[in-house]
Image 1 (tube, rainbow, N blue to C red):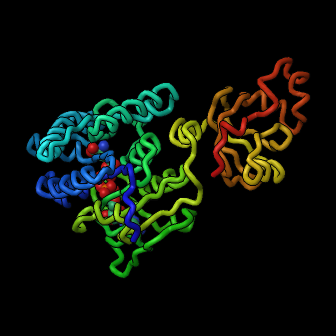
Image 2: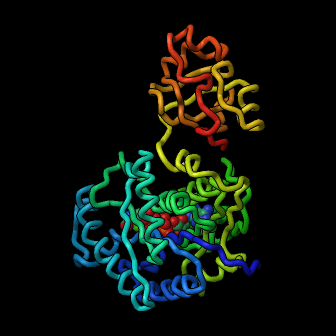
Image 3: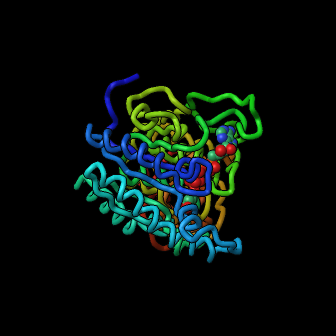
Length: 370
Ligand SMILES: Nc1ncnc2c1ncn2[C@@H]1O[C@H](COP(=O)(O)OP(=O)(O)O)[C@@H](O)[C@H]1O
Ligand SMILES: N[C@@H](CCC(=O)OP(=O)(O)O)C(=O)O
């Protein structure tokens, strides 16, 4: 156990924790979670709460109506439930003399760098004023195309926005098991993960209930995003006594995901958190080596193939010859331009296109190695 408390944490509470498996918000348990967060806050830990449960709270508040399984029903429930949910949190945090501020986000708020910076400023202003930011997806207006889609991924993005030093994903299981414990009573808990790869992803299934979204699969994605930005993550049970405080104290509970890289700077964090990739480039061994080992920019010489239609400024996945992603970056050239430049030396750009946006297709400041 280490005794140094983290300075800023993101706590994500799944519907499974907030309802304790029932169809209603478990307010008694919410008080207990708030008590822990208030004590940590008192000890100097800044807290960002990512809360699920709006849809469940909406169902409860309207007396469990029979509704079509449609987007508009869910949006209606989220609109009703979100105000119930924030009211419940506000009442509970107020008991400890703490104020809360609500931030409802969608993917679109993070894709655009300007909007991303605005959201980041609001979050930091709340923290500076010792207010607890409470984040959820803006389900009442968001449609699939502009949604993050699940609060696990949303909480990882919140951890990047907040520059947190720990992400806690609290759920109804003790952590990540080597099989879904719902159908596999012999499944074993994995206490620590140093690398999130395909074999690990294969262990993580979807949600075991119709209230949760994404199950363990989206928790792994979230841990992966946080770790790539250099932020440790942990998946643990939200029902273990004192779990938030114990995790902050470094106790070995649940599954810890240990980052391999150090904290990324702001622009690189946005590249990870922000726009989904619009295309991909396949690179030869020399280019992969230059990007991953030497921290170089990507030059046209090392590009083997262009995938997708994209314009200058698009986020791209950079993959090796076999298609394995090695980096992500923002392109200074569009797909059609790269088609013409690939394989050529940088000094030929001007002669080939008649203009140049610089010698690198992707500058190293716009590149995150995965
Ligand atoms: N390998 C695994 N280890 C642990 N839980 C798993 C695994 N695969 C799938 N799950 C399921 O993920 C569920 C938790 O995710 P979810 O239902 O989305 O909860 P939450 O509301 O907390 O986000 C668990 O109840 C479990 O059934
Ligand atoms: N935004 C939704 C929750 C989405 C979600 O990811 O739920 P969960 O898997 O329970 O964390 C809501 O408030 O109901």
